[in-house]
Image (cartoon, rainbow, N blue to C red; front, side, top):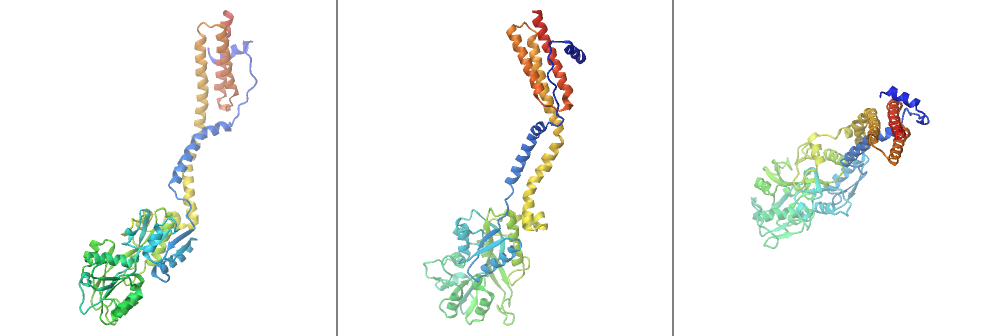
Length: 458
């Protein structure tokens, strides 16, 4: 039976009750929202995955473990402070006793210290698994002065003498003990290892109260070295085995100095000498915000990038580290030589906001907008699927009606038929699918008529 004949039979059949008029909504927003749901859910998942890999907004305050008041560490920290302030970052400086104290504070979770300047070679004094390096910032040369009528060739020649190696916990003491041990000089032997450091140690050497001194950092400032070079009977140790020391102690660097490096007029030292120097690294917790990592390296370049007696211009900061693994963000910066695009052209806080918003906008551009283009097709598919499901129910009901039916079963089928028709009528659908809906209702009427004729025949 074609659709026109079915329609005519329905119109002529007085037993068919025509339901109340049914309005089609041209824009069924609820249906569109339900169709859009999977797209929105997928977008939310993509956004959440993106946010998982994006750091939150960088903090506005950092705390650095500096050093003793007036020391090189403290002066550098103050210079970092001024540079970071340009980007709205407040750098708090904590006064400390030096490199070892800096590392201890950094490894203490309750100290509140975020970054610190730490001399390489002392990392085995604390648990540093949480720490990364932002690079080597500068050399901290080791200078050894001694009294002797003739130049010494090896540190082992200081055995049984009085040596000032610095107080307990100081960076110079840790380094001195390591080098002396390599020369079979250890505490408890015939050699007296004294706790003197800095001015006290140099004064003791000048007054013949000690035979040798180990100096690093501010204790070995150029002015102090020149003073000792001019002192009668005091010599500066030449590490002729510098290449061997560097092999044994990877955190050390060989620094060759030409004659006259400290005093051209007096030609001091009188001949080229070799010095040893650990580097000082800027160390942070591994969860330091990537944007702050870039800012700190930029500040370090401004502070340490110039040339000096012991370094060439642009030599520091350097990605070459010894005591701590280089931060992934720092490695990226040193490799690319610049900040990311947003931080290069936008103010710091605007760039930070831009990077985080980008994680939201990219899924919208990649998932939501293309998904909206397919929304009408998805919606049509959902409507057609619903109609086809009703057809499937109707066909199953019709197949059951072909056999012999009891009055009770026929009544049950008619009730089920009413439920199918009611589900079609009650469901709001767009006008574009009206023809399919009315065709379905015609087929429902056809099956109803067949059941009624069967009942009349019986």
